[in-house]
Structures are given as structure tokens and as C-alpha cells.
Image (cartoon, rainbow, N blue to C red; front, top):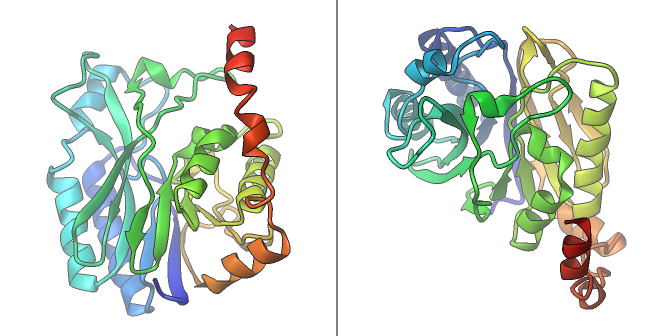
Length: 282
């Protein structure tokens, strides 16, 4: 793991057409590598914008298998440009029993072009007037953090950020950087929630949080990078494009030593209540 590395954060307005979005993504990968970035992070729905009125059958036609052209082209570009890539797709699998529904999937591609991790979003956004479960199938596995040349990366997606359990599980399993590709919908207090939760997940776990977001269409922008002490390193506002930032991994240990939240957890006490609370809430 590199002590310091350069990361690229992408804020994009995905079109309806995956060929356009793929071409734009490949362009940014090349530009990021030319700027000496070793990691580039794309937002949720990178493959295509799915408007609320789009039918599940129509989205299914856009989706691909994990070994399809979209990921293959990104993998080739990652290898050619020697850069780690966090990307997202609508994924078709042979095991999905829900007809016409697809997975909302994020992947880690290493700087040799190898697909290292496939995470299928487990918390679907069925809230605040939305119902992602009409088109999407929920995953049921939290993927272990992936060791890369820039650090141990833990994946979650958008609405997952509202559930602190997944961030903590990733952290205690070794994640030093949480990457959350997102398409955060605009709305009353939504940007405030976004910023507060990104900072909370960073502070409580002593990790970097990298959160590339969609902007335009129905989305809020505000792609952010937060350091382990809750300091905002990047806030892209509503600007489309890419920003580059240098990240110092040694800061993780420094912050965790000064603010030992993980060390000071009382798991010996917590474990006595998990089953009790679960049964009571049922």
C-alpha cells in the first residue's frame, strides 16, 4: 500500500445511452492517468441514467453481465493506463430469479485490469417517494475490502450510507478507504443528510470516504472526499467533470491513535444486546 497516492473523483451527468457514458468514462480514465492518478472513482448509474418512468424491461435491455463489453472496456483501459478503477453497472446474472430486474453493481478493477471485487447494492432506495425495488434486485453480500496498490478499499453504494452497520463491518474487516458511488436524489434536507452522513462514517470509523455522485437530471451533485477526522477535502458542488486529490494513508493511523474510537468500542457489551434488540424490534 502506498503511503501517499493521487485519486480522481468523477461527477457526471449520465445520459440515457451507455455508449456515450462509456466513451466519456474511458476519456476520463486516460486523463486521470496522465495527471498521475492511481485511482479513479465513478458514481452510481455510470452506465446510464434510468428515469423514474422507465420500465424494468427497458432497463434490463441496457444492463449487461459482469463480463460484458462495458466492464471489459473499462478493464482494458485500467490495464493500459495503470490505474485502479471503481465503476458501476446495471448487472444481469443467470441466478437472478426476479424477471426483468437487474442488480445495481459496483466493481473494483485493479491497475492490471483485473476485476477484483463485485458488490451488489444491498439497501435499495425505497424511501421518500422512490421505490428502486421496482427495477432493481437487492444484493445480500457485503464484500470484503479489496487490497489494492493504493490501500484497502471497501465498497458501498449510495443509500447504503444511511446504514452505519455496513461501513463499520467494512472497516473492522480492514477497509482504510470507503468508496460510495452514488446517485443522491435532490430534495428537502437531502444535501444536508449527504454531507452529515459522509462525515459521520469517516469520523466514526477513522477512514477516508470517497463519494462520487451524479449531478443533473434528478441528482444533487456535491461529490465529496472526507478525511478520517471529518475534514472535507473536496466538494465538487454542481460542476461536472473530475477533480484530482492527493491522499495520505498515514493520516489514518495518526487519527486513529489520537481518536481511538475503534479501539475503545465495547464489543464485549454490545454482543449481549444484539439478539435482544432484534427480537424486540420484531
